[in-house]
Length: 454
Image (cartoon, rainbow, N blue to C red):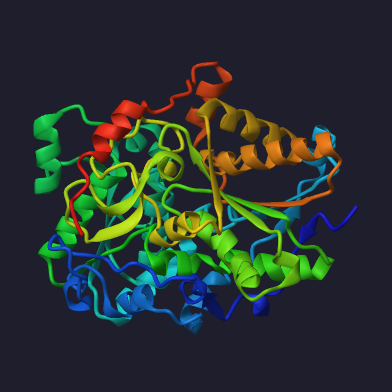
């Protein structure tokens, strides 16, 4: 049996992020304004600092990680690559199952990989305050932590259903000094408009984004931060896959298939993009590599959405982005994997799927918790509900290997721990969780409201 836990030294933390845009067959579609014309950087600078906008638009393959960022990364990075040997034995599979464990960060997830550089670049650009949204609370905790590292106050609009389901994530944010509000709120026009139509709204990431963007746009010293979707966010997350490649090199293996949970794309892009770099470079090891984004059937953006220009938020404050989308006014059900309840997806992930470079699949809620419990009982780690989607896909792949006798190497991104998601596990263990597959008619209605651009 191969090494169960593969570690790196602190001096092996990557010195550069990998930008997948440099290896796309076609250049990324530009963000557009309501007039259908590309949005100039100066206009986007009303909510983002220029260093991050430069990364957002960059086609440079390697972008240096500032030493100040690497020093904070060293609080928890490099994260371990572990072999799930007990799970393999339980399944009776000839496959080798590995996971990159991001739950070792201070916030307990992969999200600080981008929160720290976002706070850093805002600080050096002179930003005085940060706003953001959060679904499950992982991103809110991470930007609260990062803001504290660089002395920046943070205001978080947390999707109401998650605010109520996950109170201890809210407590983490407040412990790190952030203000946290259940979205939709009466603090913004976007929130008031939603509440006027539906006073009992559970909220959505699209609505929370609108509130955070509105606040940032209204104040010249405030900037908006986003935990997924945008190019610079996925860029920062590539530290995950870059470390994993070094770790596989140490044990002389290479994955045949890579799974990542996918809501906006940061987790999937972080683990998969560096391996796609090998594929683009003609590395023979990656010739048959499969990279699979795994989403919930209740919010099937990649598997049932349209590849079109759409707003990133519910109110139309953001630029239009070319992505797979269910429509910006899509209202997902209150599933427990709150970080995957987003109507759109990363433009980079979307383009790679559209061009056939990656795959996507959707899995139901109950089956993901079944996989999470199976993993926890075998490996001891309680995974976050979002991570359970990748675990479900990895287990299913391992069972296919059992049936065929294939000795594949399977890698998945374990994006965080589920210590503050126990109410969700309680509902699963009590048999109270339900599957929800979003009706085709409701998706079609939402897609009918897509903005009309050329």
